[in-house]
Structure formats: structure tokens, C-alpha cells
Length: 104
Length: 498
Image (cartoon, rainbow over all chains, first blue to last red; front, side, top):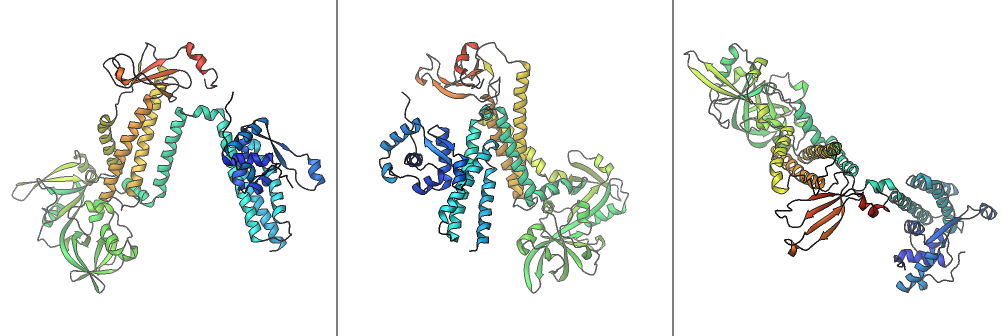
């Protein structure tokens, strides 16, 4: 059985935020209070480690709302497992970012 | 804040993102830019939803954009780590040469940019006049003046096949006054007006319009006195000082190398030879013709003089070039000392012993030796530039302290550089020149006489295994290479390096 990855607190917060429905960088920044210079590089590493994956919003959806398309992130199966392990390691994680938070 | 300023800020933020995008690998740049532009749009809308724009809001948005630089740098790092060619470079000969060349370039740049170093190198390469000598009575050590001006006058009147210039100076303590203030008692050298021309030293800050004036005696300050008493102020040239009871105009600053003239003068009072009194002894500086230079041997030349009674007087000429070791001479001396000291701190053997009779091809051995030679050359160059940088960046040109600092620096850099070079060379695979890695301790020190004990390192490309004995013994005193055959290939099958 492969050992569970041990995430830093920042990475765990980002995973928790994505799991809570904050699926793009700026939303994660606002919820966690972390600066952009921390959030985006951390997301690159999480994506490299295949804990999250990204997809671009369809242009037609963005056009309909008269805004540029966004890049959305979601947890992979590995990311979900890592988050579960991180919640045991960081018990306050769920209190800091409640699961019911959804993107505005 | 006006809407116009809002658009200016927006342009600035986009400019920041544009700059940051240059750090992103080209393949990912367009998508990265699109994501950050989109995020910026949302950040701006979120912060400016009230329609009002404030400095605070703009600062927050600018902070957000500055984070793009960290993101871009992160992507660049990830890209580097992923590249196989960088993995291949790790521990390779090319990486070693790259770092050494980088160090060399940095030290070279410092030597170009630091004005003191530039002045020293310019001085030592341009100002030395070959054939300038100091004439002493045979047996005199140079610290005591032994020559008389009358001797110089006789030489100047005679046939001069071997010399084309003589200058005399005599040092005495004189009180010096500057304006209404007494500057103290200096060691003033009453010198022939052509002293600096004969010695081949140009004066600094020489004012052209000062030279023809003959109504007042001319004074050349030593560089040390100029720095200590006048704060290295070039405006001192042209002012009048009171030397003894006579006014003298400062016409220049002697070069730093002039301290090597015996007598330890603080200033030189330039006087025509005919006006120098015959009493007292001094020093004679002369310049040899080409024929005279041909008579020199090891920086020395014998001079014999017959007076009217046909009795012989022997003199000795010492070349200034020999007396004044420039940076190059000091450097070579330091290198020689370091080479002599090297065996004391490192084994000079390359330890290329092998367990088997297998020997690398001649080409491989030549490449290995060439690599070693290149490293030594680079270390020598680094020692040269770093020593002159450290020695002369703040020391006066050709000062004794600068020479000592250069000698010590050059010695230390070359000695420890060579030690590193040899140790590095011993741990490079003879086949691919990559450093061997993954050290493993084998055996126990307490069982040295029963079984092998030491460290084993392996070439990441799978060519060789290096055995270094933990305790050198008569049967295993130095490291040995084991050339790996094809039976080892399975170990490296997945590495993707081989």
C-alpha cells in the first residue's frame, strides 16, 4: 500500500478550500487569506502531484456572463485521499474553511 | 481618483503580469497569461464593486499582481526539474566547468569595475620603464645613502654609451607649512628635476600650466602624504607650501610605486642638478641604454668607474623592475608557494588504480587529463583576478599592504582551489567524468584486518564503482576503481540516465 502523502498546512488549506467549492485561485485567496504568491504556486505543485486537476470554462458560458473564462480546479481521487489524511493531521482545517462554503 | 487614473493603474497591473509572464516557460506562457488576466479581472471587480476606486484598492490589486512573479518562478523551477537534460548535467564535468567559469567571470567583472584594481593593472602594465636602475656603491645595502652628486656630474660629463639619464636625490627632514598652518616635519628629498622621467614614473594630476614656471621650486608629494594630509584632494596641485623657509609649488603627486625609492621621502623638491649642493650623500637613479641593458644579469649590472688617478670604484645597478614586483610577479610567487605547500594538505596522486587490468582508452584518459588541466587553468585565473580584486579595491596603487594582501589571497585561493580540484578529480568516473554518488559504508572499522572496510560510491551512469578504504593498509592503501560489466545493467535500467 502506497504511503499517504503528507501535505503542508498551506497545501491542506487549499485542498480544503477546493473541496468546499472554491474552485478558482482568487476565491481560495479570499477564503484562506493567503497571498496570491503563495496560493498559485501551491496549486501548481498540487496539480503536478496529481492531487488536483484543472479545466477551462467554456467560452460560451463566459461570454453569456460578459466576463473572461476562468480556470477551474477540482480534487482528484488522490487529492481527496490526501485531504482526508490531512484533516486528521490538522483537526482545525474544517473549522477554518467549512465544507458548506460555496463559490459566489 | 479619476477614471483616467483607474485605467492607468489597470495598464500598470497588466504590465506587471506581462513582465512576470516572461519567466514562465514558453509552452505554458499563453495559458498562464490567460488565467492571470482572468483572475485580475475578477480581483478588480471584487475590490471595486462599489464603483469607487481608492489607493488602498489599487495597492491590494498590485500586491495580487506581484504574486504572479512567484507563480511564474515556480513554474520555471518545475520546468527545470522536469527537464531530463538538467538531470543529466547534475554532477557532470560540464556543470563543474560552468560554475568555475561563472566564478571566473564574476572575479573578472570586479577587476574591470573596481577603479583601484583597474588603476593597479593599468599602472603595472604601462608605467614600468625597462632599464631604470638604482646605483649603489658595491657592498651598500641601499638603506644608507652613499652616493655624491659630484659622481653624477662626472658621469653626465663623460661618454655615455651605457646610460642616457642620471638623477640624484638626497633626503633631509624639513619643516613644511601650508598657508598659516604648520603641516609638520616631513622627509623632503632634494631631487634632480628629471628624477621621475629617469625612473619612468609619471606624476598624477600634473597640471600642464604649472610645469614651465621656474620662479618657484617645484614639489611632488608622495601618494601616502597626499592621502593622509590632504585627503587625496587633487586640488592641492598648484597650491604653495612653505618648505623650510622657501615657498614651493605642488606640481604633482608621485605614483604609488615611488615609495620603493630608498629614503622613504614624503615629498620631492625638484631642483636643477647645478643648484644641488655638493655636501652630503644621496641616491642615484639612472636609465640604461639598450647596450647597457644588454649587460644586465638577473636585474643587476656591475658598474666600474676609474677616476683621474686610475683607481677603480665599483658600483652596482639594481633594476627597479626587479625591485618592484608587480601584481604578476606576486601572483606567480604565490602560485609557486601554493604548489610547494599543496602536498602538505592533500595527496597529489590522482589514484587511478583499478581492481582489474581494465584500462580506459587513450582518448578517455586524454579527455580526463584535459578536464583536469582545464580546471587548473580556471582555478589559476580565478586566483589571479580574485587576488587583485581583494588586494587593490581599496588599497592605494602599489602599496605594500596591497602586495601582501594579493600574495596571501593568491596563495590561499590557489592552494585550496588545487586541493578541491584534486579531490574532485579523484571522485569523477574515469569513463564519463561524472561525480560518483550514493556513498555506502561497507564493513566495520574494528574488522579492518579481517575484511574490507570503507566507502563505496557508484557512477550514476553505471560505468564504475569506487572503493575508498576507511583505514589505509599495506594491501589497500588508496582508492580503487571497479569497471562495471553488463551484469550490472539491471541496476540502471529504470534510471533513464544511461
